[in-house]
Image (cartoon, rainbow, N blue to C red; front, top):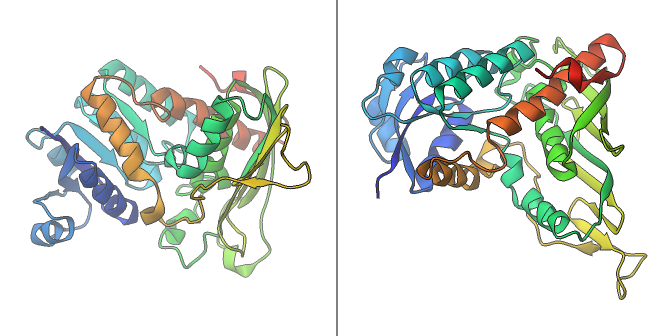
Length: 345
């Protein structure tokens, strides 16, 4: 069976996880890499198990013979220009989060992808985790009734022990607590709640620890979301905590509730004073090697073969979640609620 030919833009921590996941799908293979660093092709082949052409320019990568898909794992501030160039070259796109660091750049990417008619996948891979696939299945079956309140929170101290710390501390590189990492939690909240966000209110602050002092932006934020149908949600994005990684999930519905991997339903025979437990693999690590990329990429290449938008993490999903993020960051900056109509085109 023919495999899609993939080129990777940026060769760092995320790229190594992406390459392994792409090749493991059996539906695609990475054949080229663009990096600002000189890469040894023999070493790349030894690491990844197949020949990989190395390029020092984006133009060189995009001109690679037979290349159909680009996977962008570069620095966040490079994402928009590289995605626009890839779309103009007619390449389908996989784009790491955050897709962009500004609303203006989001619109540029949205326009370029739409005009080029290429397919798109944003790496909100938490939607493809056992954790949220299981939760979503319970919600879809109506086991919780109508969810009227939900909170999904991200706790992960991103300090000097992480390689990205050197650039993540800058406003240009990290953007905000939501953009740099908390976006996973906010996106998961939108997945669970469904519907349309009408308004957000965000407050932010910063740890007094000297460890996180170099950050140029507030590293803890909390966002309250109001949906058009009156439901509400909450998302905390905490990247300056000194604790184990924790992806907190609590959903409250008319017929039950979900707390992380525990659940309760209002049915005869269930103990009203105890939780049941789902056999789900929780999101409990920020390590990219632990992310469900392979599951997501299998869905992307399967959809690509049918010339269909991928489910769950297509362009429209990326735009919807990033609009809420940019509205939240604007709220924190202005100190007032921000309606989504202020950022939606």
